[in-house]
Length: 248
Ligand code: NAD
View (tube, rainbow, N blue to C red):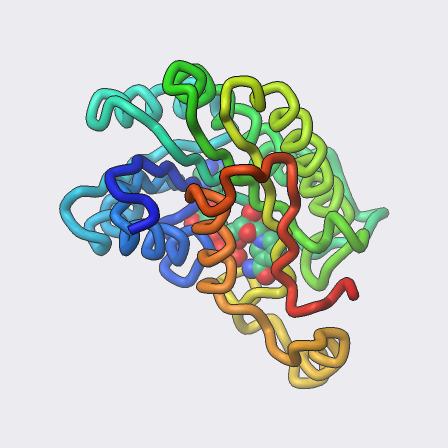
């Protein structure tokens, strides 16, 4: 078991078809105690209980410092340590450049970028004390190609910001043996993408994916397991592309 008795906190992991919950299932199957943090307490608890009795579901808005700190205090009260953080919570808005208003910008950057910063700040003192930890940031292929299929330009900017923050954190935390890495998913079938693809769109997207299929949430979970576990012990500051070859 790659994560036996490790404590892993995953944000935005209550959505049954989402990347976060798939990662939670993968980590639990490898022996981790998983903490699901999402907006709704009932949904987080229900998701955690689906994994078994050792796991915890908590409510927090990752962009709210007080809620984030209160959630991490509860994690430490229950388990006493935090080995892995997956910054997965994110929202997307399929709008064009000139339609971006302050509220759009604030909402998207708050969840992806401020959320990643606040959650990381909340766990770093513990990881430093342990002299061990792995932080995984979920960015997007949209950050790399300046746009995806659904996210607007502010989403690309937020996810590119996540990559910059990830590298800066990796540099600063390396001496403490805290590793920080990112995953850039391509187009994965989840609630974010469900029902939004016409047959025509699907065909034109597939034409640009050498592996000729959309991604599955388990594809991201596998990459997250690698980055969370000792298999990646000498990797920090890296970006793992999981996109079926979209950027070749
Ligand atoms: P999803 O909508 O299924 O899940 C996102 C989860 O985040 C939801 O459970 C939601 O409640 C939660 N959330 C939203 N705002 C939050 C907040 N402020 N605080 C706490 N939780 C919050 O989406 P998904 O497809 O599983 O996406 C997961 C991550 O992967 C996101 O960061 C997304 O941008 C990224 N991503 C997804 C794809 C894709 O194709 N699905 C591609 C690239 C990147």
